[in-house]
Length: 136
Image 1 (cartoon, rainbow, N blue to C red):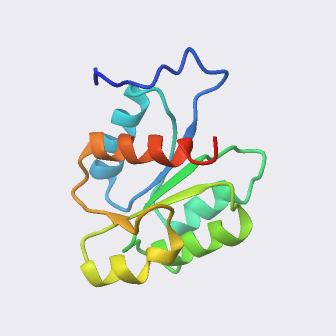
Image 2: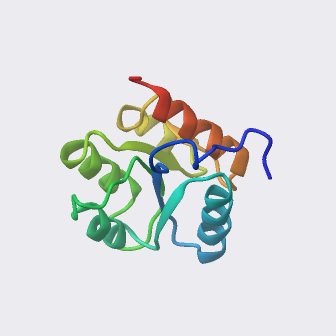
Image 3: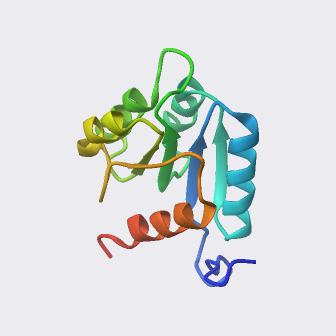
């Protein structure tokens, strides 16, 4: 168990993270780690799946972590732009390897443009904690 594990039992309800990644092994591994850290996790394999979740405003999503290069019509940039427009209370983390894409996406994300893949799970948790603490 991580030493700085979020104590989900102490808070009224665990924060919800939407993990959007086309690679099932990457998505499942990161999602399991986040659950282990006390987050409620919703998984989506595509931007279209993520939009289905996000369009239901009864489903709380505190943070959306999405890879940039999603397969399908809705890539990570389009998804982040939709979230900014339609669910501005949801923090966004874009993940990917292209440096140029990171610079282009800077205005879509809070406090820095992107995370690198492969993910370092603890860095993901630290980034989520920072995003959730902003505005408190």
